[in-house]
Amino acid sequence: MSIMPDHWIRRMAQEHGMIEPFVEAQKREKVISYGLSSYGYDARVADEFHIFTDVDSAVVDPKNFSADSFVTRRGDIIIPPNSFALAHTVEYFRIPRDTLVVCLGKSTYARCGIIVNVTPLEPEWEGQVTIEISNTTPLPARIYANEGICQFLFFRGDSPCEVSYADRAGKYMRQSGVTPPRL
Image 1: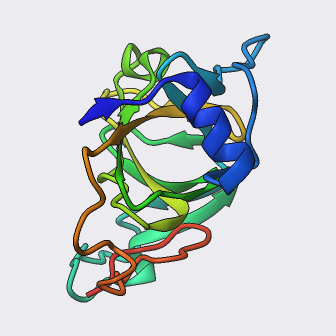
Image 2: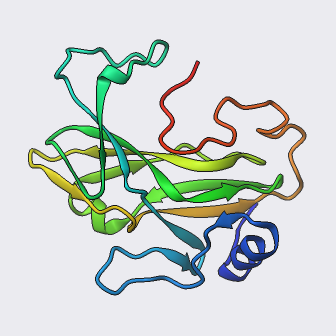
């Protein structure tokens, strides 16, 4: 299994629609960077956020998830201290059958105590990626919409898998927008 370089990511995006919209080179002027990097792609966070709140005393239950657990906001947001938000990428991804994608948070946010989590994008999964954002600090934290939030790394297997996410009819296939837990 090898990590894939910029020229492979570019070709897969342009010829096979692996990333849409695709930004050819990293954009960095007065924004948190996004776009193609040497061995990855820095994705943007869209302007829709679900911020967890205890206003209605809801319980977060992955088997019985309730929208009462969060409030929805658009644009740049503030995540309260020691709190959490769900968001999604601007980009839509289509993962090849022989590829697994891993996501890491950007250092600009990590150095501020903001942790980004995304589970691996499995072979033949497609959709906008739901992003989990944790504010681990005792202070409010600002998140900038339509700027870089995380980096995706593409690992190509020695051969295609026998059973892909699409073959299993995965429950998060072709998701659009913020997608809460499903059972």
